[in-house]
Image (tube, rainbow, N blue to C red):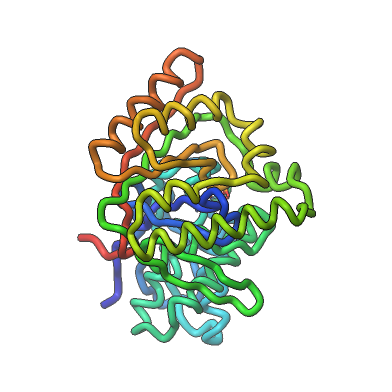
Length: 307
Ligand code: ADP
């Protein structure tokens, strides 16, 4: 096998209380990539369709992540990469993570899988560092493992795959304003109060438990963020209205997707997720900002090969 075409899912990171640690992979939104072995050693990005992004290996997250993998095997192999972008960069649904994980996952397959998923997370995190200046794993982990993932620890890196209840759907609205991850990090405080910490880790525990025991009400109650959301939501037009209307339409809860501007809601069942999409559209339709709305089942598998 010398060539592979892959689907690289969009992901929601920073799931409410799970800033930098909880993420989930989507099913109906994602990029496509073709990765091909070459005689020449190294990584070349030969095509990038759908977005204005750099083709240079060291400026594209796919190139940087792939080089991190090649470095680990002594830079003995060569690959060319075609990227078909469907996820808009800076959308908050893991555009950079889709490219960096797609590259390393496909190369690992073409090499006969010398690396574990955890190794691939580490390589892909180099791409995230290029995109945001931080080695965060909460988008790349769900893209590689599928479903919900928890980054229990960064040092050492410890990623746990969490059960995905079958009826869980995500609705995401992407207002087409750009908020760079690097900018939305700058506005965050660097310390929290013990009181806020207690609320937050109670909710993280509740959310993880709710996902494992498939208790949708508990999932909903736990989708609360007292630390990041109050600060970052100021950057997102109509955030509070989108959230409250989503809940009125039946969503279990929601929050900021990644570092925004996308807003997500989780629902039990596809019909409710579609009602939530309609409620989100109704909030945004008269405010003069273009937007996309996605409804997606949770993707239990992560990156996969396609024909
Ligand atoms: P998202 O949360 O959607 O991933 P980020 O702001 O974190 O958005 O990342 C997008 C940044 O990464 C942009 O500055 C973009 O130019 C850069 N970038 C480099 N290569 C890629 C790529 N292949 N796909 C997406 N973004 C890329």
